[in-house]
Length: 218
Image 1 (tube, rainbow, N blue to C red):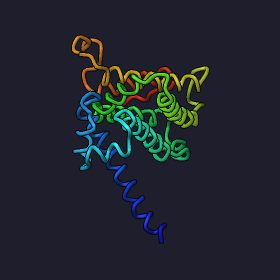
Image 2: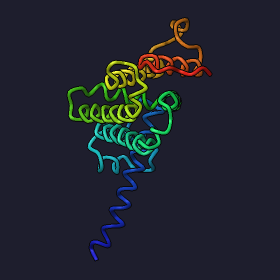
Image 3: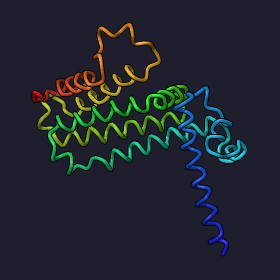
Image 4: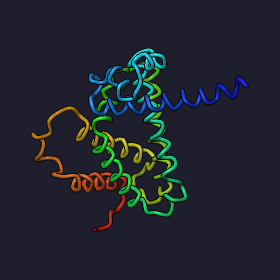
């Protein structure tokens, strides 16, 4: 009987925690790290600050859970969205086009949240949390490299695996610099693509050219 009583309570507790983490991510995206406070998160989640503190000792612990949860879900989406069988059926250039498009759209749509996640994580170097973040980032990159390596015969670079890893890191770094970095790009307009369509085209061209993959016209 006690077990039956506990199960609904545990289910409600998990649901409350899920709502809390979702609310914290939304507040973080809207208000940044400094503007994300426990009272603001609690209000957004429909909870009292005391209910938040019963689950997490402080804001940092809550935001660490938010960051890790987002990264784990992102890696899981990547795992389920692209199966090896699916990737084998499309040319490398088409797969790269899909990836660049999805990343660019995702960075634009979630810029506030991604910027805040980056700021929060960078303030925690040499911590167990930071090690987990890096591990998750590397796992996602390695997953993508593994998928691209299914087309290794199309890659003309002498070291396809190294080339793919570096190309993916370069792609990510460029998006971070152009979309998430906290500086004014108006003085750089002469040397960067004028709109997202041009940016996507140039990112894809750079990615494929580095790999030595011929990009078909049109």
